[in-house]
Image 1 (cartoon, rainbow, N blue to C red):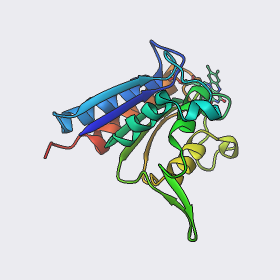
Image 2: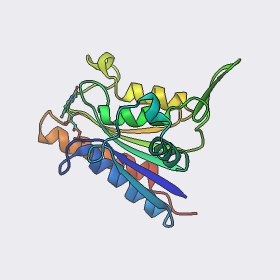
Image 3: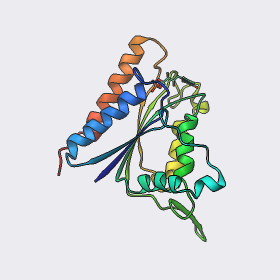
Image 4: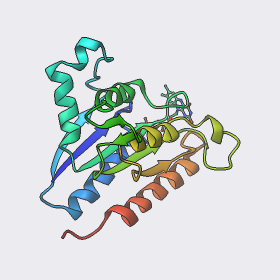
Length: 191
Ligand SMILES: Cc1cc2nc3c(=O)[nH]c(=O)nc-3n(C[C@H](O)[C@H](O)[C@H](O)COP(=O)(O)O)c2cc1C
């Protein structure tokens, strides 16, 4: 079984999304001890923006294959300017490929990448939850749900820690909530 672990925060120490994604991977490793983990740090080693020539390169094919070969994908994502980091967008542009992860046909769009377990660890400084005044300008969680759903991964689970910039008490509570959700969802015995 293959697990692909992705991070995209420009922060190293103290990054909430990195802490939550790492905690998710630890729990998944506990549940599946013989899992093979591949780590891709999109901030430390950014992918180039796509170009027509670049997309057909061996390197781009390798990025796509790494995703296609994964049974489990864990993605650490900070909200930047209401959306996802451009580093992560570049990765999405490498994996949302017609004929590989989705196809158009007479019945419309079909996602071809289904069957993977996807956990997204999302951190944001403000509050954008359902019903909040800023909910309509949340374009990180909503975008990822849309694009993952488009390629057949509509059941991706989102672990959100928000309000992280609103003081240390809110930050601690949000992180504790995220870890508790991970315990509930990912800590299952092997087998
Ligand atoms: C470049 C940049 C842009 C940001 N834009 C937003 C934003 O639009 N909304 C928000 O709530 N927080 C924003 N933040 C705050 C981050 O989402 C928050 O600090 C989050 O914890 C970052 O994730 P990390 O701790 O994994 O680095 C921004 C932070 C940075 C560095």
